[in-house]
Image (cartoon, rainbow, N blue to C red; front, top):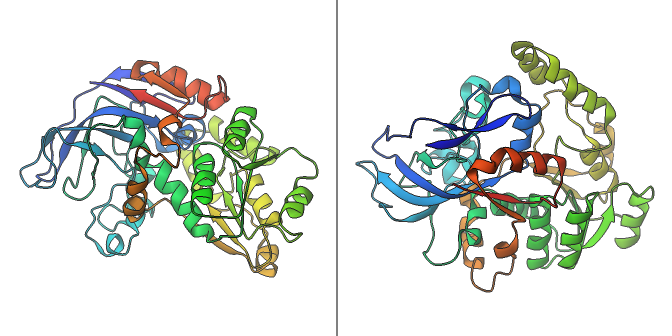
Length: 390
């Protein structure tokens, strides 16, 4: 089959690789019809090379049609249409039973002290072949795939794999009906603003610096500010009764602009041999923390910061005095996909209240994946959300 594979920093290729096969009686094989390119894929593209091997298959936002099922699979059959969550969870362990599928005890990568395994995402999360491919082996065929109806286009459902539950959890963790600032208007941040509006948050403010992303959010009624505004904090306080927002979502993570020291750390890691770089990332602070520090600065005293953007450093410095003094609550983590599916799926109707049908800016064939990664990383050609079609 054809698959998108990693070959080094900013070097992804479409290679011919062996087809996946059933390994366990509860496995299924899915023929992929749509697969998303995620902002966290850019972390592999840029800085996570020490934890990935040449030829690893990327991608964790797939959907498609069941082609083959193991002997013990009873909940789906060949021909069924399914979305595959990005975190690999058994659905039956202690953590899954508590809605913490991202901490699934069956697939935790204990060797690295990590939570549930992920599709297409480094040794830290199991080094499982990903979904930017023509076919994908999916374990836990009775509990992991999300069965969706026939008829509507893939765009209606594909975001159940990651974007929708990640943004939904970010808004849920923010826990406000009053005022919310979303830092970063990429796919997750943009969708978080839509979900916040749908759930009745009175004041929703988005912050970014990319004109196309800002225009998208402004187009569905969000108050949008430029992160490079020298009076940004004052303007946000003016819009939130002088106190700041009750909650802030950091939808940026380690890619934050405005942090030159951490940018140099990212570049330095890229120059180190993999074994040394891996150790450095596991013991040092390498993240650009501008977005998180901004969140801490602007959030109201007694407020909440919800972090959905991915961070990768183990010793990143935080202003603990400020966090403690302001009595800030921090909530974060990988999305627990199945925890939120029952709440989200009823919204994926022809009314399309979250605008999923037009959410993608680009639909490209799988063999154009290197181009897709390039324009998404460079924020060119108005690329906000790219879907690949095998």
